[in-house]
Length: 303
Image (cartoon, rainbow, N blue to C red):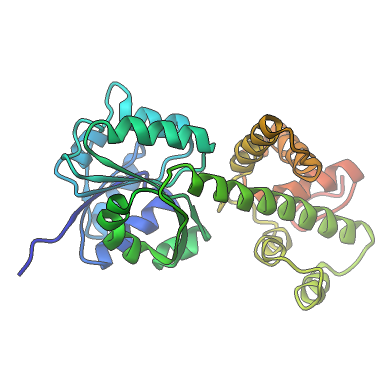
């Protein structure tokens, strides 16, 4: 019998929890850490090992998977006062899954690899359901050695792994193109669906017709059922796109490149966040359109 590879997962929310459980099914010995103790307890109940600190989770890990929210949390996880960079064994690989600007990914990679560990720029796509079944898409870049060390974990967590080059930051750039499209598509779907409600149309029938027509998008098909149900419990929160479309704006400004559709979408996410919906599902953009126009949506009042 061979000793199973040891994995540490930082962040056991809707994405990280599913990824940690996919690693368990893949035969890893998995230790998980999350600031929310309930998430750690739930993971332990499912057969994982819970850790009280990130450093405890990192100790002895062959592969570390970071599913935190953003670049600042990633940097703190690695290099903060309780950072894990010097706790991970030499030769371990750190998979950075948070969405961030490419230049930040490059900086973090250089700093970690200077310590004798490996960094794989590995943003993810696919949502919580695919995370739970090990069917994510990973947009990865890094050295051949980083890919080799990360391969068993990638195989357990993902249905598709795109190897996008040897330079960290390339995966992050690909993810930002995806996020530009995703944010615009959510805003467009929300605008159209609320407009349909304003026209007095049967929204269930609108959903049926559009999902069978050329105007459909993955985001329309995936998000508008939340509006139909009047259920805005967060599967992906509004504030995620406030962050991500903000990064798109920063990248575009630096490149002197116009992104007017992304800018308009960002304003709608900002409006939703400012109205107190930042932690609600990102389909809440439809609620903002409804509020602006006095339109009724399922689960809401008339005003």
